[in-house]
Image 1 (cartoon, rainbow, N blue to C red):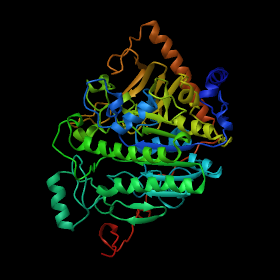
Image 2: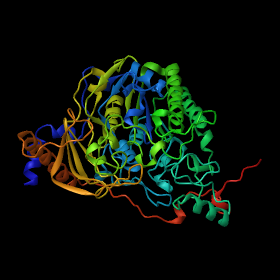
Image 3: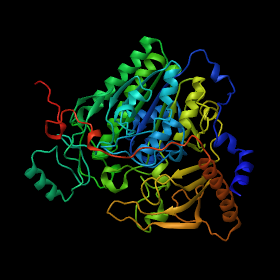
Image 4: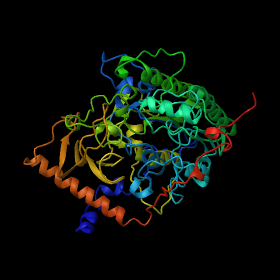
Length: 541
């Protein structure tokens, strides 16, 4: 039965959406352009759809993202764009490979002591472009394996500066804002014990400091979070200038962790306590800091090669709701069915707030200015779209899950995905399983619950068969599921089941499926100098 359903669907639209083997020819010959375009991907950590000023309704509240708003005014805002997963590592792996976690092997986050990372059998966007003459560089959070061959400079990037995983996975001397707060790097056993006892929190990373890598070398441990934006900005500008001097097209991947706790806004920013980020305080100061960095990158790109550079800004997942005032805004995508029963509906979940992310594409003269698209798109689509624009084919020995969105970006078409699958990302269900399906305007849940909300409630895990189905065109807050007795429900349920059965069969028969090594060992922990407390690097002066 599964095979017959799969073949039936494959003969139709599944061929272009699910199995992306060759890149499409576009209307105006984008693949044959003499000058190949530059690409800047900016991935913001834990950012909410409602954090982007351009996504807010007029008069809703003051915008904290003037540079991104300007980029949206001069480019295209994608309002129905989704991260490939609702947590860090799986989302990043999918973006760089164009494949779901069940194919590329990355279904949950890697740890400080992870021996492995994104499987070496996977080919990244950076590797393909590098092999085709692009200068490739990455700045920021990697979180796809830091040990040996798994580091960025071994996965296609000519240059790397950044942190190997999340901000909260190592101590610093001047901790940022978190809930609950963590102490500085280990000052001594008894002092540390007293601080942890007072905070009532024992899960802080205190023994190993957060490192800053340049290429394969730790250059600072613990790093200074408060100076990181300045360092990232100057490095990004250097990368753009270096590529220009070399006369090469470039890929710059900037993964910003400003919105991931602990937050580290600039020291000059006003930081009044606030119950919600919309009212000011730490989160909005961090958001403004991130926006300023984006503006600096855009300005540098505009000054050197404005009409030949595509900038694609998006997020890795939604806000970390359990962090309360240190989390962003999901906007209208509140997952009310879940929140009314207890528990979170943002990061780590498959509710809209967990994966619908603010997204802007900017390319003067190519992407229509001041345009908005409601095409259903995903971070999985970045891989095939950029390769298509570069005129490069991906390896033909594997199956892909993204589509080429060139016609959406350059020609204003609304030809997005007919369907999307949202993997379990750390809340309910098994990691990576595809138990939530978006089909055009409808969305079906086979499992819900188990994510922590602000205040500590989690809501119980619930299996749904038949699934919960919502009509997002009428209910963007996902509050009231369709009545299972209606004809609309029965039609959607039948189509969703066929699509899901087809994809699961396709993955089960895919010979290119990879398996990630999630084993941990202390020897894999990044440590600049094991002779010193918290692996501290001691530099002269």
